[in-house]
Amino acid sequence: MAFIGALKNGRNLRVYETVDELSSSLADYIADLSEASVKDRGAFAIALSGGSLISLLRKLCEAPYNKTVDWGKWHIFWVDERVVAKGHADSNYRLAKDHFLPKVPIIHSHVHSINDSLTAEQAAEDYEFVIRQLVKTRLISVSESIDCPKFDLILLGMGPDGHVASLFPNHRVIQEEEQWVTFITDSPKPPPERITFTLPVINSAANVAVIVTGGNKAEAVQMVVDDSSPALPAGMVKPIHGELVWFLDSAAASKIKDSCFSDLG
Image 1 (cartoon, helix red, strand yellow):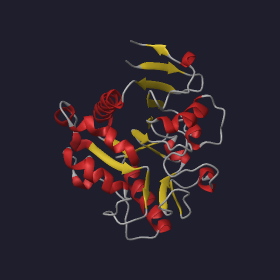
Image 2 (cartoon, one colour):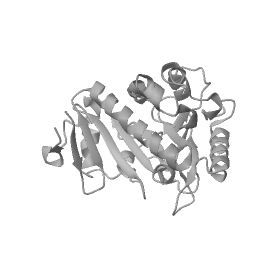
Image 3 (tube, one colour):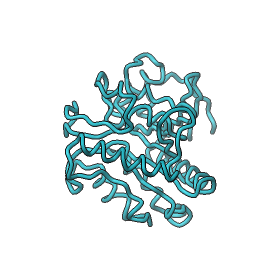
Image 4 (cartoon, one colour):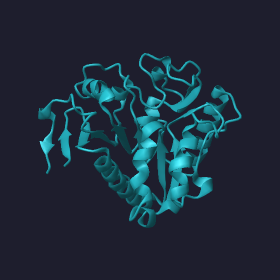
C-alpha cells in the first residue's frame, strides 16, 4: 500500500511498505517518463547515481518494461562518479554495468561515462564538455531560465548524512554555481576523488527522484521533510521548473509525521 503526501515545500512523498513495492513503482514512474520524453523530444536523457539505487532499478529489467521501453532512445549519464578505473569496485559505472546495463538493450554509445584516465579536475571538465556538446544538439534539453542542461530525469540516492550525488554537508562544492560538473579530492566518504553534478544542474532537471531506503536514513529524511536542517544537501534539491518525487520505504519514512500523508489505498 502506498501513501503519498504533497508538502508545502513542493516535495511529493511516496512511501511503500517494502523495497520490492518501491522498486515496482519506480519502474512504472521511469517507464512513463521515458515514454513521454521520447514522444516529445525523441530521446530520454537520464542521470543515475550509484549505491543501492542501481539494485532498485531491477524491475525495469523484467517484463513488461524490458520489451515496452524504447531503450534505443535512452542516453545514460552519471550524477556523480568516483575517479577510479571503470573496472574498480568503487566505480558507479561498474555497478551499473554489472547489475543493469547488460540486462536491457541500451545502445553502447548512448552510455556516457567519465574518462577514467584523467585526474578528478580534468575528468569533471571533460564530462561537462561532453554534456555541453549534447546540449548544443538538443539531445539534452536546456533550461528555460539559467545556463544549465535540463535532463529528463535525475535519480538520486541519499546518505545517512543527507548527502546527494557527491555533494556533502558543509562542503564548498555545494556553493558552486558556474560549473555544471565539478570535482572533489577530499570526500568524507571514500574514495576521496569524485566528480559530481552541481546543484544548479540537478535543480534544472525536468524531473528529479530521490530514492531512499533503510532506517539508518530515517533521521535525515525527517530533517529534510520538516526543513529543520536546511544545510543538508538533500534539502537543497528543489527543481526550478521540474517535478520532485521522493520514493521511500517504510523504514526510511519511519520518523515522518503521519499528518504528512494521505492514504491512497
